[in-house]
Length: 401
Ligand SMILES: *Cc1c(COP(=O)(O)O)cnc(C)c1O
Image 1 (cartoon, protein in one colour):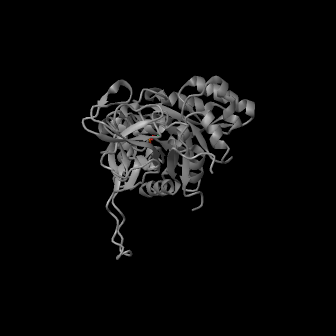
Image 2 (cartoon, helix red, strand yellow):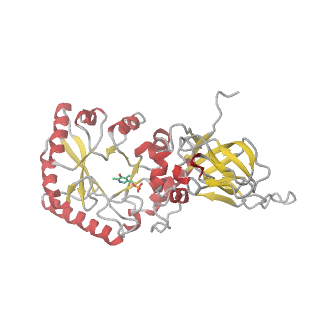
């Protein structure tokens, strides 16, 4: 017998990831380079597997949050360019040279620090200048960007490899996004007056997944995009302007039923007794709870697919168990699979055996991560980051298939 059986797992479809990346690329102007954002363990998909696949699918540069993530990624390939998006702590500075990373610069102090690292290493370190055009987070304020540009070009041990900004509301506020783009272009013009050349020798980037929908025709002077969520097959917002890119979900979230039992009307369910059964009810106890990443906010609110049916969650989600109403499913049993995020064939769709050839695919019941996130009053990014370590990631489609 296997030493352990999966009770709750995430399935990662790497072939879908590759198709998504290629499709996104195909919608972009030919000169546009692809920065694959793989921070937070590649959005919970597993950095090594996801990045290895993307290295074969057309990524030009990888972006991570910090040097620890960069170190993990560096194990995969010495040559790959890596951009660190977050500010470094002082003790981390030497790793820029050791791991051959490009840092983000938002301030004059960082220029001095990183130039010193380059001097100690005896070579020029690549940096990207970040410009704050209204996000109010990282980057130098746009009206001061040209001064930092001049300082970087004067630093003997730094090489400017990119210039970028980040949008605050690309999915909801096209006017503010246009304003940010305008501030960025203005800042670039002031840098041009100081010698900046806007060509392919630099990565000039602003757009994340949602920004793609607002990219100007032809893209220029932008020549790179930073894609996170969309490459994993998730639309950043239901109304995002990205319907021309067909992507498929990469991630699905599964568990199994550990126990089925009948409870009499009037019984209260789970901690705090927040649900009382209105009738005699068949309940199923799932082998997963908030210890696996099912948000407690799904208590009395979320649904789970069993046998292609949507079954409501009863009472509070607990650390290791979640309780479902499976009264609609007479045959449900210990061991049956339940899908938290993903698809299941709907019941009663078996094709008559007399016509096996012309089978149309069985209709699928689906809970997508957008719906799951809304039950928890959050966003898909946070859900992906909340699937815990207890949940093994199982990879379909190994490299090369
Ligand atoms: C996370 C991140 C991205 C990717 O955003 P998505 O919306 O997931 O595509 C791009 N740029 C920066 C600076 C980020 O932090």
